[in-house]
Length: 110
Image 1 (spheres, rainbow, N blue to C red):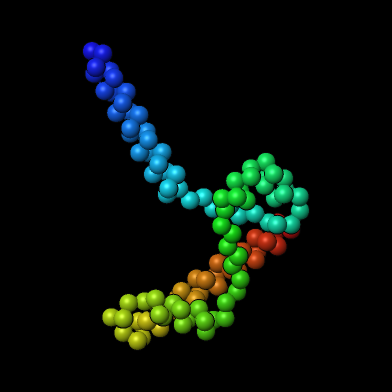
Image 2: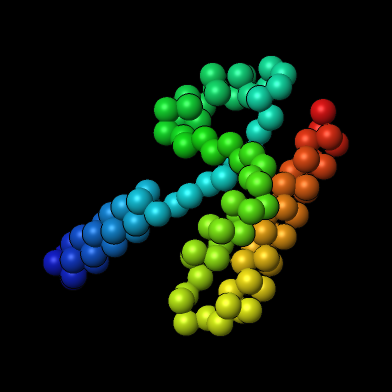
């Protein structure tokens, strides 16, 4: 009995270590916060990891032509020119819709 219990405990410990390492390496959390007002400053002081372990992405509007060119270049070369144009145009529309929603949310939370 005692060796079996030790083996189970060691197995659980190893399993927990593998799980913890995978979560630490792969978990991504998205935090959306307005830089206006004192709340962000207070949260950053309370949770310094928000500053020291964070990547900040600022999403600004791209010109439609630039988005179209990048989207078209990312698609597989096997697509017909018409399909490439349709898919890249859809990508431009989705990007624009995301920006529109972000602007709307910004206006509502001011």
